Image (cartoon, rainbow, N blue to C red; front, side):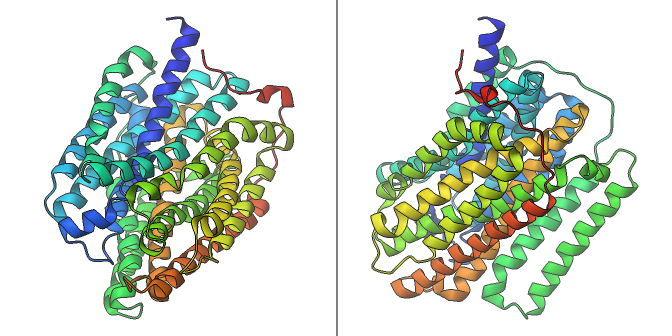
Length: 473
């Protein structure tokens, strides 16, 4: 295998990593009603099958990025796959709520090792060639929506025709293959001396977890209840402690001054709000298709394929050319605005609606927005840091997106429940709840567009020729 061909095979494995960590957030969507029935989840706690993964993923990403910088990206990449494999096996075997949530958290921890090391390896392989880096990021970015929809589609097939534990077992052979292929395909990279800020990792994970838990539980116990305010206060204290620890450590988990580098802070805010709008849309669109329109698991997954096809085409063929022609800032702002428009359209869903009228056109508009915003905000974030902090920058941007996803889903779940989504079987009430969630997600995306327009600095455009279609080999 030539060195050039080996690089693209390595990119394929990196894209597979992105595909898998995103698929594991979505594959359980269609299976949620079966998981709820078999394991005894309450409607209010059901979103924790998603959030347990995402909070562990987002909370440990900074630690994963730091480990990647210290111990080597290739080593952490392989280790993450092993942890994901173990978590997937336990999640499939779980016979109760506690074991299922713990296993999902282990899966999230594995993903937290995989994601930042994957981006670091991508930069090691393609960072020296801006033209090839754009192509590599396009393929990497397209793997995310592909994983999202593949998760929904596979989840539908598996839930309909096999059984829900297999939505977790499907990870096992893929993880084993990735572990075996990593030494042959990935560059060894280097290691460097340094210490691990374990206390920082604990405080940020506890703080983020408490924030999500408090928001999810608030509709059930009341926003004015002492329990709600106590949990949210604990979240603020833990996150404040994390910032104080980072400011005082000689070798912190996250060097706070890194946010002064170029557009890193602004791009991360864009990723946070992008995740906060996009993932709730997926979650509630699945529920609308199944619980209001009456789709079974397989048709529900298939219904989202048009979105994924458009996103992949947009990220691979459209986004690189648009970035080259207009620059990243206009594309981030435009993408978030188009996403907001699509979500606003979805907010018009009806109890007696249809897929072709109420879902398809609005979801395609939202998909176009996602395809325009994701690549430029991601590329801007990871290219703003120093090369030796590539793992940290990758960890930060992944953290922003995943925590935006978790907090966004928690907030939209609260909005939906308050508007009637907790009244199972009452189609008008369910629709009102899902409509409110779509509208809130649209406001989140619109807020992101405004903030990006104000905070992102313009970047030099590349020649349009630099953004020719992606070829592999």
